[in-house]
Length: 356
Image 1: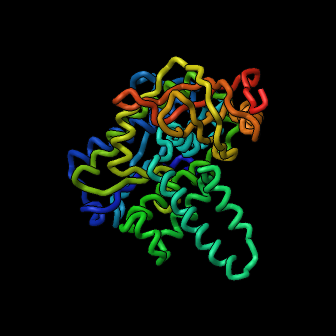
Image 2 (image 1 turned 90 degrees about the horizontal axis):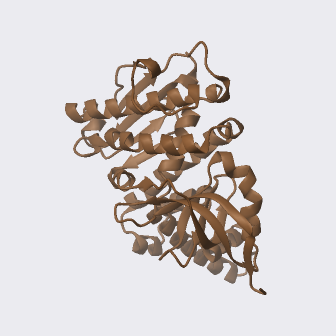
Image 3 (image 1 turned 60 degrees about the vertical axis):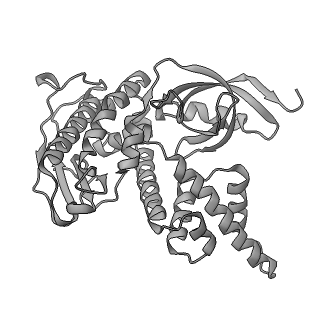
C-alpha cells in the first residue's frame, strides 16, 4: 500500500491516554471519520461531491487495530486501479489538508496572542539594543508584525514556542496558563503542515471547480463535529495525520469544534469596500478591514484563485491605497456575524488612493 493511502485519527488526553474511549462516542466518531474520508476520496477520484454514501460512490476502507497510548486509529484506503486523472494524482492527505484549511481557519485568539507576544518580544529586543547591541533582522521582523498587526504561520508558531519556554513575566501576565500557548502551538503546527501538503500539489488542486470545493466544505463540516464527539467525556483533543507517527495536519479541541459547528459559508458572493491589511502568499491567507465589520477579519484564497489573485492583492496593499472593492463569500456563525471570509476577486478599477 502507498503511504499516501494511509490516514490516522488520534485522541489525546483523558481516558484516551490509556487507550480507551466511551464506546458510543467512539462509534459515532469513527462513522463521521469514515464518511469524511469516503467523501474526500470520491471527490479526489471524480471531482464531484457525493450527496450521500451509496453503492455508486463506495470507497473501500480498511481499519487497523487501535494503538497504545493516545487512542489512535489508522485507516487504509486501497489504491484504485482506474481513476479520472485530474485529482487522482493528488494524495488523499493533501485533499484532506485542503479541506481542513478551508473549514478550520486560524482562531482569532491565536492571532491576538501572536500580536501581543510579538510586542513582548520586541520590548525584549529594544532593551537589548539599548545596551548597545546591533539591531537584528529579528528586531525588524517583530517591528513589522506589530506595525501590520499580522504574522505568518511560522512567525506565530515561533512566538508560541517562545511563550512556552520563556520566564518573561509579561508573557505570564498575558496568559498565566502555559497550556494556552501549548494549545496555540498545536494549532499552528497543524496549519503549517497543511500548507506544506497543499503547496506540493497546488497545480492539481487548482483544477478543481470552485463550486465543487464550496459544496465539499459544506458537506464535510458536520462530519468533523461527529469526529469530535469523544471530546465530550473521553479526550481533550484530536489530531489527524497521514500516519500515526507523522506530523498532524488537523488539530481540534472542544472550542474549535464548537466554532466550526456554528459556521456556514453563504453561497452568494458580496462586494465589499475594504482595506487589505496583510497577506501571507505561501498560505493564501490574510487580513481585511471594512466599515462593514466591527473588527479585522481573516480571509483565505482558495488554491484555484491563488495565482490570479496574488498581484491584485499585492497592488491593493500598496502604501497609498486606502480601499478597494473585493468580492467575498462570507463564513457566518450562528449569530449571523462573519468570523472569516473567502476572497474571490478584487476589482482593481475601484482602488482609492490617498491622493484621490
